[in-house]
Image (cartoon, rainbow, N blue to C red; front, side, top):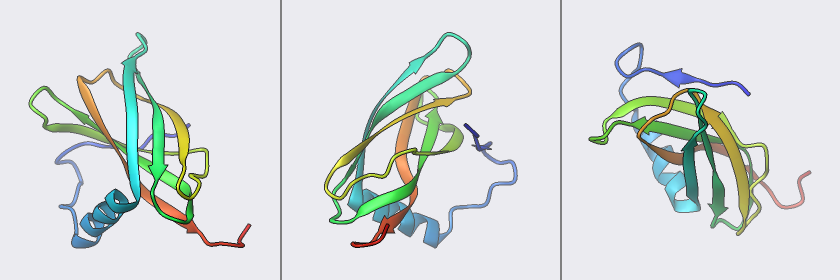
Length: 120
C-alpha cells in the first residue's frame, strides 16, 4: 500500500479553482463515515464507509486523509486508493493506514471515475 504525503509549505501550491470545484462536487455525491485508531506502532488505522448518493457507481476512488492538530490546523495530507467500487446509491468499506498517530483526521473523497451503465 503506497502513501503520498504532502507537507504544508514544502513544494505545495495553493489550491486551484479546479481542485476546489472537485472537492465541492465530491461532497455532492459522497459521504464518508470513519474511525481512526492508533495501532501502537507509530501508525493510525482508518476504517469506514464511503456512501455514494449518485445513481452511478464510482471506481478508482481515492481518499484524501488530512491529519489535524488540536486547533484544527492541517499537519499532513495522505491520498489513499480504495480497493472497492462504490456502488450506485450504496456504500463501500475502506481500511487504510497512515504514518503517524495524529490527534484527529478528516477523510473525504479526493477523486474517482464514474462507471457508466453497461460498462464493465
